[in-house]
Every structure is written in C-alpha cells, then in structure tokens.
Length: 464
Ligand code: PMP
Image 1: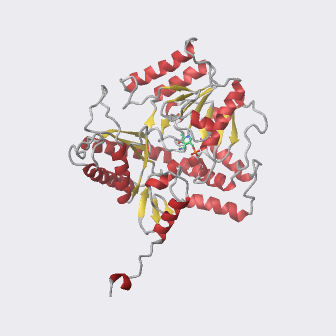
Image 2 (image 1 turned 180 degrees about the vertical axis):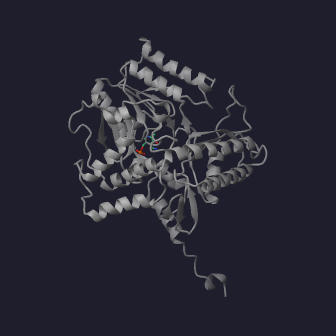
Image 3 (image 1 turned 135 degrees about the vertical axis):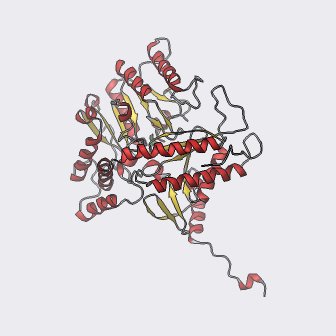
C-alpha cells in the first residue's frame, strides 16, 4: 500500500493554522508578528507559553510595557476588584474612585515640583496620542508653532508624533543632534560629544540668522529606546533643561518607555534631577493595559475644554492595573533593583562584546539594554565605530527565538538587539537570558555572512 494511503494527510497544528491565517488576513504593516512567529496562549512573569507548547523568556515585555511581567498577581487582583465591584467600565473622562486612586498614586511618584503644581490630562490610550496632546498644549500655551526634536527619536505613529521622530521626512520640526557615543556625529563621543551637541542646540536658538525661530517646545527621550537604547548623559539633560528654561521653551520629556523604574530610577529624569515642563507617560503606567497621560506645569494649562478630547480616556481596568503596578514598583524598590541588576547584566554584556568582534557596542541604563551588531570586516571610522549589520541582528533574533528567548531589534538600522525584561526577574533568570543570548550570537555569527560579502563573522575568543 502506498504511503499516502496509510498515512492521514498532515493536519496543521492549531499553532500553524493560526499563523497561516494571520499571514493571509492581517495587514502588510504588521510588525512584531513577522519576526516572532509565535502564538502566545499563557504567560506569567518573564515566561510566555506558545500554542505549540514551547516556552519563551520574554525580553520584549510588550515593547517595554510590562514592568511586573505578564499577569502579575497584584495586577490581576486589581483588575478583578474593579470587575467584582460592579463599577462602570466606560466613563469617558468622568471622575471615579479608581481614577482618583490612580492619579494620587502617580503624583506620589513624580518629581515634587511637578506633582505639587501639576495638571494631568488623560489622553487616548496610546503613547502617541499623549505626545500629540503635549504638542497641542505647548503650542496653545506659547502661541508658537515650531518644535525641536532629536535625531534617532521615536515618539509614535500619529502625524505630529511621527514628524518629531527620527524617521520623519518633509517635516518642519527642527532636528537636533542627540548624544550617541558610539556614532557621535562630532566624532568625539563622551562628554565632549554631548557638550558639542548642546552647543549646537544653543547656537541654533541664539543665532538670529540660524533660520530657526523660537519653538513652542522641545521633546526628548532620556534614553532613546527604539532609536537603539541610547542613554543621554545626565549632564547633557541638565544642559537641555537650562537652555530651554532660559529661553522660555517648554521641555517635554517622553518617558513612555523609560518610566516606572525601567532605567533604575522611578522616572528617568530622576537620574539628572531635571524637572520637565511636560512629562509624557504610557506603557507601564497602565499595568499592561492601554493608558496614556501627560502631566504638566499648571502655567501651561491654557487650552480650552475639549482641546484634546477622545472617547477612550477613562479605561478603569487600566487605571486599576496601573495604580497597582506603580505602588508595587514603589514599595518594592524595583527601580533600584533594575539599576543594580541592569548594571550587572551590562557588565556581562561587556564581556560578551570583548569576545565577539561583531559586537560594536553594548549600552543601556537599568533594564533597558542594547547590543549593537556591526560588520566586523568593514573599516572602523575615526572613533572606532563600524557599519551596522542588520542581517546579523536578524539572525541573532532568530537564533534567540530558537533558544526560547524573545528579544526586540531597534536602532537606526535595526541592528541593535534590545533587552527589556520585567523589573521582577531574578538573578537566575537574568543569567538564563544572557546565556541564551550569548549562545544565539555564537550560532548566528557562524552562519551569517557579513554584509560586505565576507565569510561568516568570527569570535574573538570564547563567550562568557
Ligand atoms: N514614545 C516612546 C519613547 C515610545 O517608545 C513609544 C512606543 N514605542 C511611543 C512614544 C509611542 O507609544 P504608542 O506605541 O503607545 O503609541
């Protein structure tokens, strides 16, 4: 009997069927789903289980959203309490006890000056809508129109947020240099590079023939996330604060990704001690559910009722989950823990870089870590930087997934492997993440030819 007659036709697993239907039905613009072909069905903490039964360590964390990891008990309890209470789930922007508690908890964590004299605007539930609100707010308050933003920035996908992002084209947003040590535009790096970047900003504002008029505001990320995990030096942030304050330019700090302990301080601005005029918050403040707000100095509160309306600005479940998350991070000192563990992980990543010449740079702050992969066969520039190697980065991401580790790619050329684990991970889990990453890099360099057509990249020594 022929084999085909005895064997039933292969039935695709539920996992494969779901992935196949997704690729047939979903948009060409889908993103994470392309490089991470998994079907999550259960998750707890750092771990996700797929429909195929495989388990993964999740260092993407909903693009940096899950400060407490998946389904943390305090988050689930807070959500259940709202559901069991019979409270309305949809309330537009009306006052509720849940919202009141969230706002109180949020203000308790913010820089004092901002909390004491701050106003909060609940925005549409995405970070990008809060960025739009921030721009509208400062434009109304100053009566000016222009904005200043930084090379490599990412602020979202709606029109003005996109215009302020590094990938924008044809915009009237004035672009300023962000201090990027490894690829310093002034080819000096370090404090000198950051100082030159600050001076350029200052001269654009003070030279009345620079072609740049007084803007309505300046927006920056304290650590560029999507731009490739680039922490701004604290001194440079203080310079930006001085430059903007001296010229009555509202400073908008986008803490959508850096907030809630991620960088080793509750808010990344706490490292430098600067107090922004507007702080943009989303991701972790919703405790894994959609929520976005801006908090700003009350002097800016000159916009009219309805100036930034929207139907979904009262997500009660997100506020309850968010308040529980903020309180847990605060009372358990998870910001400090992120700083200490992140420093140790960065140390180990440094050893990994010493062992692999395809790693151009490792950097980060707290549990926001990046590994920039480069073409080792290409010549280095004057500061030692080599061209990015996005093909190798994609191979590393793939090899990580094979080893049960989910990582994100970012950076100007998608050549930075990004780690954004929950702040709750144990030392053992951190080691497991780095073991898998090291193994994945070793495997990827063996099989991936360099972008210049050279033979597969090699290791400097043995990985740690
Ligand atoms: N700002 C920053 C710094 C971000 O990282 C992001 C999202 N990655 C956004 C804004 C936009 O947030 P959302 O995707 O929720 O619109």
